[in-house]
Image (cartoon, rainbow, N blue to C red; front, side):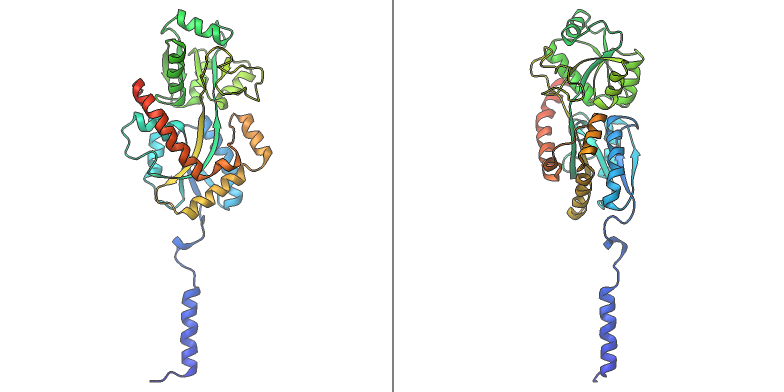
Length: 328
């Protein structure tokens, strides 16, 4: 049976209308709703500070708010594990550090793979640490601190952000490098450890800049050395650990953002662009440095650089951690 011209055009228009109609919610442009950024540590610590700095600046380019959720415990593995199990749709992300995505794999029996169960989004910062002590600790410089620790083995207590945290691992490395012995007091983050250092409840720490710099500037704690390869721009008169008598002692912690495995590349690319945009302004990078975080060069923000560094750090640190018997 032949179709009339009118009926044919009516049917064709309907077909075109179906093709042009909006798809389901899953086909909407990303992001179409708020994004959760899981911080696997308590509020107020260095990772939380960085996350809050980023989300305010990423909101503009993404057009959606990023909501921070602090899920601490087990060296950050509880929060990171939640992201590993989340839907790979770009709406649940993890910000983490060397310990959460490298160290933990050597110290815990995890239900996820720290490398292969995530999609890299962006490498954000890389910062070294400060060797600090309580205000009334007798030594006045790093050489005196080492001599004092040797003269008082196992009597001093060093605070950490938790068993297996960078504070802990770097403290073990410091003991090995200097031939000293001291106890560790493990806290649920860098902020509570710093609180007790200021209060004189513990003696020393190899601490992050975020929690220690304000206390150094206020005169509430002593600072002995910086663990970077060159001097810290915000404390130019402070010697590096190598200059102060510990050859080759360098430490650093890098921060990155990850999505669950299987998140579309277009989605992680949008998130990467938001991170790059958030840190493109020199004033923003300078402010971040004042807070104790040093943004990596622009070309190093890429997911490819992040994945390469992540893999290399696992190959470097896992044998060291296992040989030292460090457990979470």
